[in-house]
Amino acid sequence: MHQKYDIVLKDIIKDAPRRFLKLLTGYDTGKFIDVQFPDIQIKEVDILIELPDEDMLQIDMQSSNDPNMLGRMYLYSGFIYNQYKKLPIQIVLYVGNKPLNMESSMEFRRIKYSYELIDIRTLDGNQLIDSDDPDDNVLAILCKLDDGHGAIKRILEKFSRLHPNERDNYIRKLLYLSGLRNLATTVKQEVLNMPLTIDLDEYEFFKDIF
Image 1: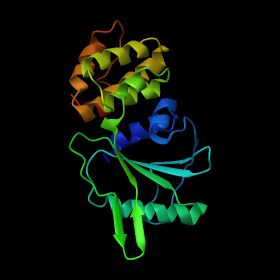
Image 2: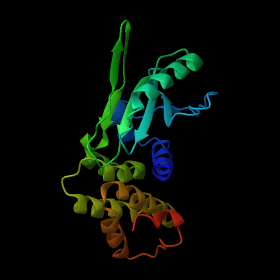
Image 3: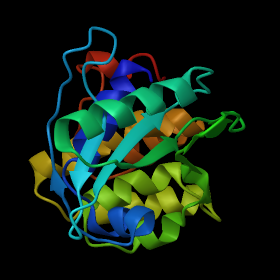
């Protein structure tokens, strides 16, 4: 996944947005685990969570269709089992704009393997906008929305109530993730219409979305 999107999404999800986790797992909380593996090809997973029922959940985020995803997730499963003696529940969360086209299962003789492949656009973004957690709100931009422009206004209205530093931080995250839905220009215009001052040009990583 593009490193800049990867950093922003990891930062959001590691703050444990409760409603988003509920949509994915059925639980609204979990213990996040930082894990790295010794293998030079696979050093870390995107997200590893111990759920309240003590199951391990691995979430990997993809902004493009990776033809090697099935093999990579199979390797992750083995590494996680070797380290924690538990086979993980595995989800690949696709956040890209192109149609989802990745394999999620394989069978060879006695071996059967699969992971869950979720297109984030199938999740209800309105539920996330209704949440009181700004991490849920910002993730809504990637999900299913009936009215994208109206959703952007609702999200920004929620952010406007936050402390200025926190508000600016979430607006920047929204601006960046909106690039995955070709909505960055719309978000930027709505931000410029708000009665606040936020200098976007000083942040280098926004220059490639406008």
